[in-house]
Length: 393
Image (cartoon, rainbow, N blue to C red; front, side):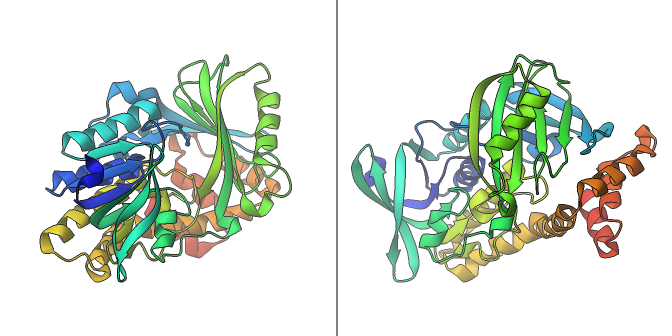
């Protein structure tokens, strides 16, 4: 029985970051237990479900079963209705997260990970200042399970991180209140992302339409925390749907917070690491966190397995995980954060002016890079950041 076993690593949270961490721990020969508080892996779905083809291929060949739509184009709509449309150089996908997340957990199990759902973690175990396991409840019964390392992949403002003394809180301006409804009975271009940029529709954020076939879509928006008192995200979304899709049928709804911040400065403690949303590994510009979370989970899993082999689970040894993350993703997230803060200050008039400028560029020459260069043209120091993060897109 898992509750009577000792593990090298315990992963808290069965999302993409947690399952990927467990997979790479097991792949590198360590014993790992993954604990998920919900009944099923992949349920409920709490994101827009968008990923890049290139990002998925870091980990595996995309499975057609996961894919609801293949995205090859993007359309940006300004406050006054200017539409800017162009091809993406790298295709993306809208996933079925229920199938995708379940398969990620299966991959971890196939490598030897033990996975348990309905296991609610309520605290950490300590030996001095070292984390040595977790405690919680499983179907009403208390449990304690020991390990040499705990990986927290338990979502935004991670409790696991706080229990270990890491600062996981966000400022209100860096927490977006997000809501999404999956709607059907509508007509959409199933190969195109749509983004509506307007302070009136989504202050400090944007509205997205992510198609799931020709007649359904994930439609949602994020509102910066600093505007949350003006009007609820739910009300903004309902107004948008009434305006654009008044006859749509809603088949699911989710709401939650999205950390649009830099990655946490401290990702590790003695015997503990954080990955995914728990570490704020979310693109601050887009709010996309699936691929960054999986990359963080992969690095955390590899580092944990290496620490077990070396017999050193100290904060000092585990800090190499922080360095690896900053090399592959953290620096770009800092750049995205700076760009986001500049764009957040743009008025609707500014956004319309940018749309008019981009519209003058022939469609075949339009790129994401050129759009963002127009957006930050008054901030010369950010031009380098834009070129760095969008190079090749």
